Length: 635
Image (cartoon, rainbow, N blue to C red; front, side, top):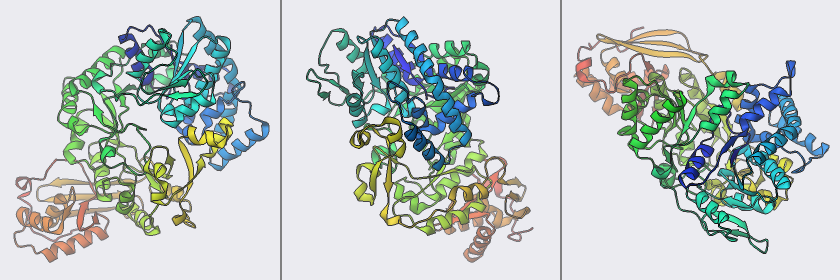
């Protein structure tokens, strides 16, 4: 049996369960899955009523935020796994308050915790009714403690059951410490499980006392932890179509299905690893754990999976779990998805991408039904981006935001701060820039997190970072010795001595005030007409202005769509509008456009900031040959 506990995202079937169930079926192993994170929603909603009733939105809020504070794990801190003292509970809640967690949500967590013992008993009864020989838990982010509680309860009731853990929380030393600290866990699969799990199940079934499967750790006959070598990297074409029937059957019978149905999204995996990270590991990134190697599925297989899953489950919204989009897909998978849309399939797809995409890439995304991207922008300072090893510039990031708006792509991104080597001037420049960008998608803003597997964690001395220990919540949740927590944790407290005394007073509040979410930032658009372009500026914090650009000024603005040098803009103006315009005139024009916040300049390149009413990939001379030489600006 395969189990996924809270806090998986409740409106997503577990791709871990779905993939491994499919893998085991393909290997001839009889198994079933249990999405108990859906059951927990019902358990807590049923246990409360009236004004204090716990809602689906409460579950979503805790799922999305608890990995930063440990709240999801803390909710499952119940006997016999752990019985925190009143003082420890008070200290943890004080920690949540310090982290500015909403007080109502803290109260919701207390109520949820009261429902856990009865919920676990129901899960135990359900598992034992199937009389499984092996129960496998997939654990990612805040699923560890909930999984441990159920595993311990099962082992207490049926000592002969074999307990196996796997997932992102089990990679490297985390998996070793998991089996060392919790004796009811029999095996841990570290790393990818598609090859390892069927092999381990066969060895367990054959009674092998010391399995040789790569990536597996276990207790030897003398009680010592044995860690086999790393398993083989899984070829993506060997990853089968996930099986989601159990989730959708459970959802159809759920009393909260009415709240969940509009949110349900189908997870799809088309690639693993990170092609950028394999060459230039971003300094702060701990994703991909111990296996960064990039692999992607055959595009025909990937396209068929979208179609098959959509037809099978009658949903059209997808969330890929890839860390980065395979660039070759712009010529293979995306055109296939675009063709499906032309034939009537209204797919809506989320993808993570890199930020330095070209305009034709954005159009390709939109044509393929990709409506939402997470492009890893991270900063609007080229200096800070270089510190991150991002391989992109502020101009490229702003350009992506502009083009995403033109092609109606939603963008999720964060503005991170607190990097070794950054300066106050970096953030002065960012906040000075923000009034120019309020018509574009605003970011969240977060202090740098120190994650296991990131270069900042693996080589902190190189970057001038002092690793202080696991994030504070681990101590409140696990109650293990410090050295054990150091091996078990994924997030860490740290200090950057070079930034000592640096203050970031209300940076998040300042950002939200200057660059509000929703439509609060206003608009800045332009339309092209015969011989002119019309700018309509309605950005928050700037005067409402309608400006007409004609002649060379219009040609320059159109030519700066992707960013261009003075020399390139002079050439465009002479070719498309006025053969006699001088470089000095263009430089004066550019200075004026930057001063008005109509353009952004970086490193001698100028980028037009207004969003086109109708984007085109390239502004051909034939389309602008009728532009006339007139005054540079007419207001």
